[in-house]
Length: 140
Image (cartoon, rainbow, N blue to C red; front, side, top):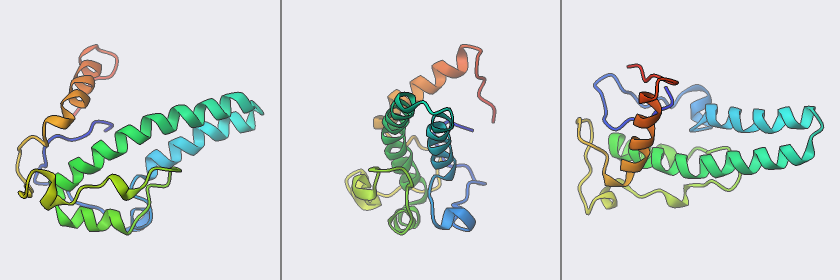
């Protein structure tokens, strides 16, 4: 689904094979370039630039939130994975990643159902509002 997970379930695994061995977010990369590409095919230069800016604006905020959540869930395993793979969207890099031991003053939590942290609260509220309005029901 398209919701940032707030807890790690027993069946959550970190996939590092296939395309994930190169790109951490292949669906985001695909959507980003597809949205720009459609405008290029239509020969609409202004919309291509606007789509690039809008997509970048969205993903430049979402990816860091999601990656800190994944570091919280998978600890050093995800952090090391992130350092050797690419985001794939221009100007979104690893420089904002916080190592697991520094995330919450030294404690790395892995595997539990604990919340990721207060920094993600607004994203969760937005996801919950989207799911409760009836237009996009969240499924588990």
